[in-house]
Image (cartoon, rainbow, N blue to C red; front, side, top):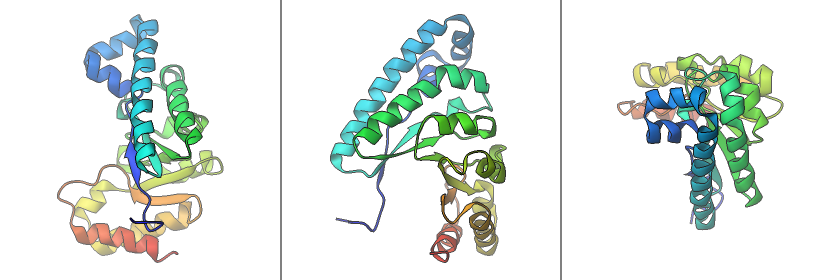
Length: 213
């Protein structure tokens, strides 16, 4: 039993674009958005219902928070208008379902999510991530846009984690904490940590966070 020493999150994602692309193929999914919006909404409803059942089971098992979202919902792929119509309602629906059960919820959209920041905050989640600086996100702009509405999570370049030195990682993490936090920021990687990342670099990021406590 970890008690209060750790925050355990479970994954109940793919409410929208990830499922559409997986079930229809990437090219057909893009065509569906334009050619058959009613069908797309039916897909999103089904995908969200599945994710909610997964999340409920995770919460019953004792997790503290739930990760929702879709990498395919990035503004690197779709426009803010498409996100607002086809993704936002379902991310909101999932968030509300999990929050009603006492879980915190964070929304993951990687790539260039900068144009979506206000819409992501409109879902009502507790935090948005991963502030993908390598994908085009400016963390300072994110803070200015939605930092008073939602917690920001992530921000440390995955390229830096992979190729930089521990001192460089520590300095960048410290810089981000100064710019975005420490209140209202959960420091972390700006997407999945690359497989071959040196453990010393991960440790440097963690140390930077702990040194601000």
